[in-house]
Image (cartoon, rainbow, N blue to C red; front, side, top):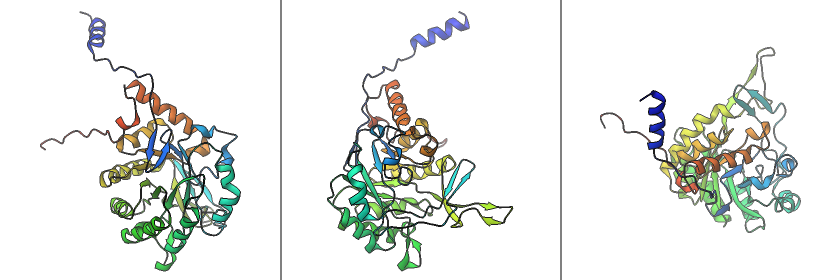
Length: 330
């Protein structure tokens, strides 16, 4: 028997994986019903209208607004963005129109997008977080909130709410008391034990978690010997942070029982699939949209193709399906 014949025979005897004709990507993310697991991340999609002419928003599973505070915020001085190998640094400073302008000027258009609209909120005190949440509670067109707990607590010397499990619990509790809808908490990676923060947010009433936010970074102009960002430091995002994000998502998925949304360096469907296999129920795409505004739709199609060719009819079969081989001697 020739090598070619043996190869053909082996192929005929191999088990066939039947392709499914219809794949369902629908999911319920902590009370938010989505047609697929791909979400446009906060801060990279503006207020939705900016991308309308460049990409079909109907392909999204959900859309998250820029971070919204109680009052309008001007942001940091320029320069605000610096490209880095494998990513970018940003120090926008959470510039936004404020909660009242969001409701009066932005929401009438956002409600027409045809996808769930999640509002990202932040504050510098627990009271500010709670008040923003209260003003958004029960508002038509808002599917849920994403709470950014990476912000500095001015009553605690500027230490981020998201690096202390007790402070994380308190600020999420304040939002939970003020808001009755689905609540997702966005976690900072700039911590020693992200699983502990995740458990605190879950205990405080979070319905879902999203991670990771940006890593703190810096860039220097060696010719002027000055920082390249007006704020000196900024948030690193893009492909360079994906291995860190993936590890943290895997850790958090093992630590909590609520859905987890993975993000950090996702640039294609293969990246998204890694997060889903690690345990994420959905993914957010951010920096990659600056390069390719249509990336979300491409990722949705890639996930569907992956499931179809492997005989899976739904997303649930893939979530958390990571296979870890036993160690020798165990």
